[in-house]
Length: 106
Image (cartoon, rainbow, N blue to C red; front, side, top):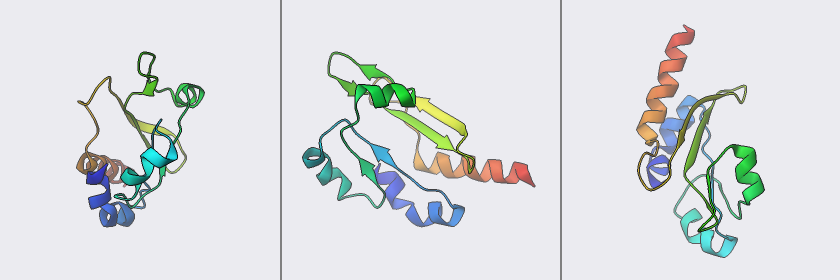
């Protein structure tokens, strides 16, 4: 998530907004949120994970990494699902994807 925070100005120039969420309660999420410059939601429930289409791990009662890129009409144009610490979308790749889609419009 810090990679996204570091590229705040580049995202802003593209009109991209970044949000994140966690199953952790507010007191546990706050130290992470304090390092970011975008909203971090907390207390994600199983029902909310299901609404997002995310993977829920029963054993630890957590949401697995689920990342979505939405266009201006809130349509998902890119996504990533992971069942562990590997395979997450890099902030620089989001910028490349947004630039690609913008170039396709021209």
